[in-house]
Length: 161
Length: 341
Image 1 (cartoon, rainbow over the protein chains, first blue to last red):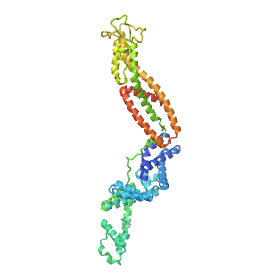
Image 2: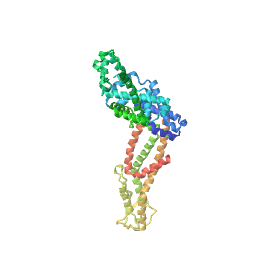
Image 3: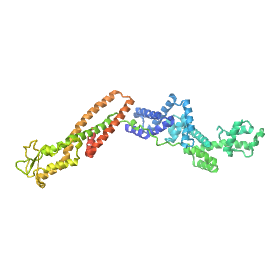
């Protein structure tokens, strides 16, 4: 990958990775760190990365960083989750976007990743499989499970309403 | 609510068999109120408990058992529809199901809403910091500062020197011939115009007009006298001179064509020397910053201060540019930076 091609990847995908990280971490500063580290790692290997695989590489790095972040820094402590849950409940339950955001938070990390890659970035199952190191059928199962869970939460919320 | 379409049948059987406690019974009945279509027509719920030992007919059992299967299949169809995996036949089946029952339409609408959409207004704020190949040091800021400083210095130089220089230049070029032409009146340096102070600075057009007045003092019939002194600077005729004479015409043209050129060539000299000095200073500064191993916070503060300083200087420079010929100064700045780059 040439310098100009790397810079092009920044222009095209920095926002997408930022949104992706933000959805996972729910913290702007943490998401910004993820973007910066993602591009830093990509730059270190840019000479060996093919341009056509640049975007996939970026998301692969981002997902690994997010996983590490969540796992090792233990960001989501039970206390924080409890507080977050309280906050979510007290916020408007009638706004679809908010309900979906809250529902997304209840998904396991891997399901969240695959559905975000699918809906936000428009990747197909094969591409998502490469990025997340899963088989195509596993990706499909996770996406189906995620949508069922989301639909169930939406239904519960609408019943409450 | 813990009773859902996926697990309600277990509650159903427990309810029929009378194994539900009062809390679960209330919840189950609430569930049935929300989903009246799940109620079994042949059974009166109020009297079910009286028939604890009742064996359900096979038709009813099969009806109960079939529901989850249909639900699951329908869910899969909905998700496959969203994922774009449905064949034409399956699509038609799904549409038929949705049109057949309002419940299915409701379920399908909920599935449609599980498609997430990215908020495009959220953007990464430091994208430029990720771009490679451009120097990410403080030099660009100082280049702007340098340009602004130079313009400011030119402005001050122009105020203090240019008018006097121009007057001297044009006065020295005036032909003096006091002996041969009695009509002419000797004019000394102080009698023309004193050098304006900063507070008294005049617009360029006005200065030009005054220079032309000096030119009017030229005795057009005479030739240049090389013996002029500093004290004998100009001669003003008593009456309006004849502007059609060749010498007068030449001088008129010379003044109109070269006045600004001379002014700007002087400015250019000042500009170049100041710029070179500034550039060498900035080079040293740049090296110093590199060797200082600044922390991120220091860099941030430094950049903020630079930006404030730049804004301040820009305001001064803009004032100067208003007074001077904006386009020419800009062109000159651009040419200098083009050479530098």
